[in-house]
Length: 207
Ligand code: OGA
Ligand code: MN
Image (cartoon, rainbow, N blue to C red; front, side, top):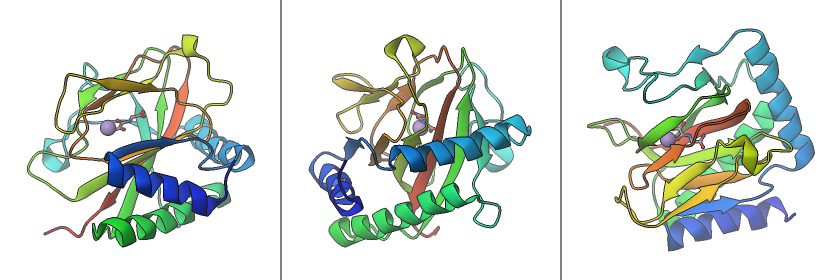
């Protein structure tokens, strides 16, 4: 397990070299467990909503496309583990800007829960006709996840292509995936166990 700086460097290097990257132990087990507990508590309180597709007035629930449930993070309401994660992401945002001059300005993110049977079909993370979401960052919160639990992330590794070579990522506790939001097609394969994560985007200022 490396220091924060080494981990941040590996994320930045991966983005520079390939546009996508996976790192283990972005949060250590203790930090990630605490974050999972905050997500679980909110889930059990019924604070999540079924996720929609599209945005604004065009947003609709389409359970043929995605079946996850989400709770948007808010600085004020955040517990200590969430606050720690947000501060780590802000360090990462600054490091990405230094290396890539992307002008990333802010972060928006949500907890996600995929109940058994849930998936999210292949997509890009940019709403049609928008460009504010530049970099996607997903942190997984599942301790003891095994391949039989399904729920892998499948990411196509050639920018812009929804076919060709791909990689799978197991949603294990503390693993972070980062990629250019408008470039890499990806999907969540069906989960057989409740699957938890934090998904978010570094954004540029809206036009
Ligand atoms: C998303 C998404 C992937 C994952 O929420 O847009 O693609 O592995 N999530 O949770
Ligand atoms: Mn996505």
